[in-house]
Structure formats: structure tokens, C-alpha cells
Image 1: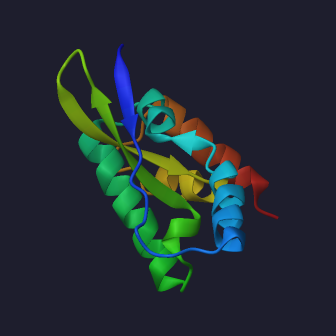
Image 2 (image 1 turned 90 degrees about the vertical axis):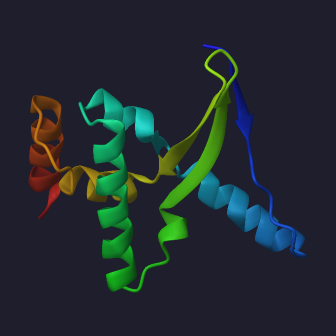
Length: 118
């Protein structure tokens, strides 16, 4: 699939330290919407799960941008622009916990999360 990745850059003035911190934080965003789709979620279910997960972050006074980032991907073949979400492991776990439909893959992830709690 021929795609072009669009990255939105901020227009404010940032220090080198802020940019470096942002870079380090982005390295933790190892999961994406593709992982949720591979677990059997549809595009609308992914949106609902991520929205609920971001709400959990906000209710716990955690900055959701530390765990979720969106980026825009342009598919040249389809001439379509779509949003891809990148997530930390915690963000991915929250999205899995809030999946509206349970598939066998979602159930395995949820069980793995429960077993990891001590």
C-alpha cells in the first residue's frame, strides 16, 4: 500500500530540551491502531475504545498525550486521509479494556492484563 505519512508540527517555540523530551516520550508509543485492528476491532470500535481510554487518563489527572498521539496518514492509492493512533503499553491496555466487542484476541489480551496485576 502506497502511503504518505503527515506529521503535524507545533508552531510554538520549543526548547531543545522540550523537543528531546518529546522525542523520548514518542519512543514509548510502540502500539498503534493496527494492533487494535489485528485484535479484531473495527475502525469505529477503535475510536470508541481510544476515546474511553483517554477519558480514563483525564479522570485520573494524567496527561493523555503521554500515552496517546494521533498522526494523519495519506493513502495515495485510495486518495484517502485517515488517523493512526500511537499508544504506550498503558494506553494500549486501557484501549483493550474498553473494547466495545470482545473477540478471542481481545479476551486473550484482557486475560494477560489481569494476570499481570499483583
